[in-house]
Image (cartoon, rainbow, N blue to C red):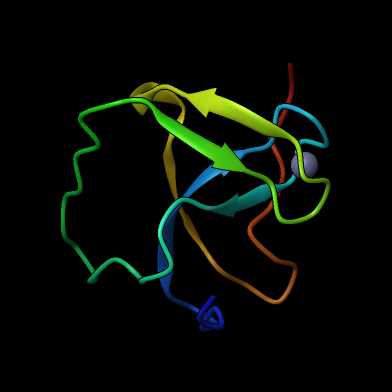
Length: 75
Ligand SMILES: [Zn+2]
């Protein structure tokens, strides 16, 4: 997998196992672009290896920062 680049935005989901954010696609999203995910994605968390299906509504755009992609907030 390509390395993440600081300050770039990526399509991410929040793992249903460990709540960590991880990338849906390796490539960064061009600034200001709108990305539509049409179908559910089956993805495996690189951190805890939990595999699950994520609906388009669960896929977010997150900016990669020093702290990482962040975690799901609240409940
Ligand atoms: Zn996980």
